[in-house]
Length: 256
Image (cartoon, rainbow, N blue to C red; front, side):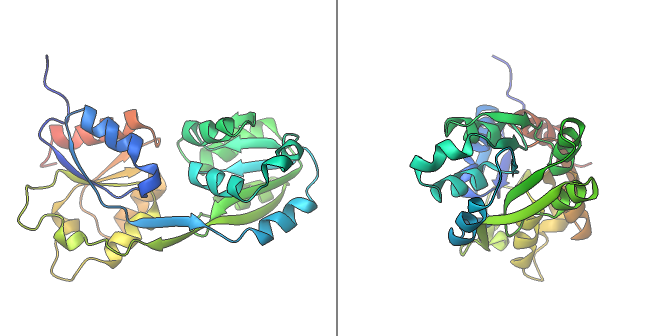
C-alpha cells in the first residue's frame, strides 16, 4: 500500500464545528492528523422577521442559500405543516453540501452551484433566470455579493439573516504549536474565520509568519493576504477533494 498524500502532517481545522466533520474525515483518510479548533460559532437567529417576510412572498420566488447551516437554521423556523407552501419556490444552492441539505428536507433544487462561491453561483443563476424576487438566506457574516450582483442585474433582492455568529470562546491560536508537534498548516473556510483567529493572536505569536494557510475560495485567500499571512494555498471549491489537493501542495513543498 502506498504512502498517503498527507501522511505525517498535522492541521488545525477552523471550520465551524457543525460543518467540519466531512473535511476532518477526508483529511484523516489521507493520513493527516487533525486538530479541530472552530473559530466561529453559528446559531439560529430570531424567527419572527423571517416568518413575517414569508407571508408576503409570491410563489416562484428564488430562495438562495450559500451554506448548509443557513438551510438548517431556516428550516427549524418553519412549521413542517407549512412546507407544502414552500415547494413552489425556486431553491438555489451554492454547492453540493447546501443542495444536499435542501433535498434532505424534501425540496427540489432548481440550481446547484459548483461550490466555488457566491460569485460563481450568481453567474450561473443569471444565465438561467432574468427577473423575479430573490431572497438570500444568510448569516450576519454573509458577504453582500449576492445582493449586489443580482440587484445590478435587475432582480428584486431581499437579504435575510437566519444565522448569527460569534467567535468561539475557547479559540486560542497562541497554543496551537506550544510544545507540540509542528503544524503543517491551518485551514480556513471563510474570511470571518480568518478575522476571528487574528483577533486572538498575541503580539508575540508568529503563527502568520511560520504556518501555511489553506483558504477555501479566493475571498478567504484575499482576507489572509490582507492580514499578512506569508503562504497561502487555495482550495477553489469547498469540497473535500479540493481541500486535499491544496493541503498536498503544502506537504509536497513545505518551504515554498
